[in-house]
Length: 247
Ligand code: PGA
Image (cartoon, rainbow, N blue to C red):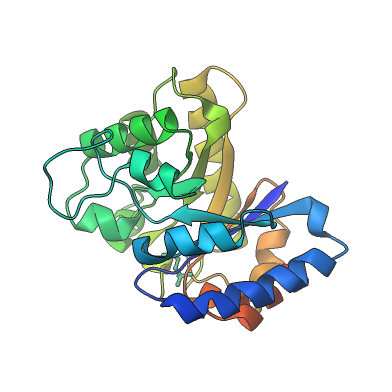
């Protein structure tokens, strides 16, 4: 099963649901629909209405982040996994580079993953190296550290999906080469196998994925799906990615 996950970031108001309605009608008629899952992570403000609207449909609604503490706390503007679950979220991203930039440390991320799993959210754990780390050939060591400092053997690996998003590829139109990406995905799966002492969780790729470059990604069979930012804000662009993937 492949994943096509749309990360809307700071985009969307109630009527933006039309984008999802169009994706849903494509999906329900698509002959390949049993081969993949669609997840969209709108901003917090839309999670409840969208989850309700798509409750019995194929589109899954998730959150872009969750707070590091369980249930309730006196932290202004914080939203916990418990609260997200209560309004219908099924997934949450954790560790997106935007949030790491804003101060998410490995300890904070470990708590976020722990409480998201406890509240029965499926976690999409994002990792990735920056340009300097890549140029200094530190990609593998950075990714190993990001994985081993946060994920624990006791976590339910069936509810974790890892998204490899090189920071230099996010929103830039730049993507790794076939060779770089194949090797990196292989490395991530190897580290995950070690952490969980068993088969690794699924690994996605994210960073400037669009309808024109998806063909290259399709050739790397170990990739279990995609985390899509910019192109997920347009139903046409998002659908084109899926269509071209199964072409
Ligand atoms: P992008 O964003 O597809 O616009 O590069 C990906 C992400 O930030 O998850």
